Image (cartoon, rainbow, N blue to C red; front, side):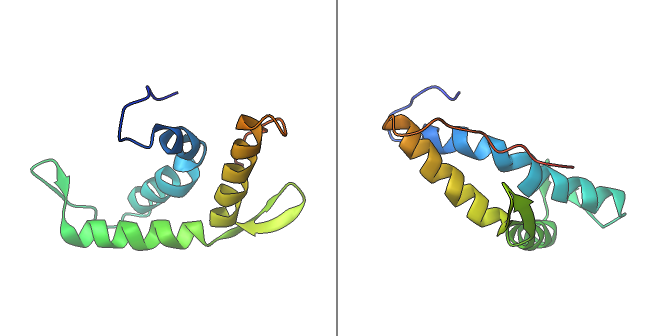
Amino acid sequence: MHKSVSGKPTLAFDLIEEFRQQAVDKVVFAMITKGENVKVVKGQLTPDTRKRLVEKVLGRLNNKEIFRGQEMKLLEIIESQAKLMAEHILEKSKYKPYVAKW
């Protein structure tokens, strides 16, 4: 869990950790293993590389997968999990984390 810091959305940071591997890491690994031109200059991705990465991450967020018996976009799963976390905080339900399939 991220340490609470005034003015920072630390709860959002905690929630997104469940999805970072599927939404970002998987895309980055795919780009590298497929031999795409990933350029880094002075420790930062080039603007072209960043643009392609963002496009691919957004595409990944719109990909559908089966989640708890339903076909859903990854973006919809994130929204569903955020609602479930809110219900858990309000002690209305138990939080069940998202577990991705590779």
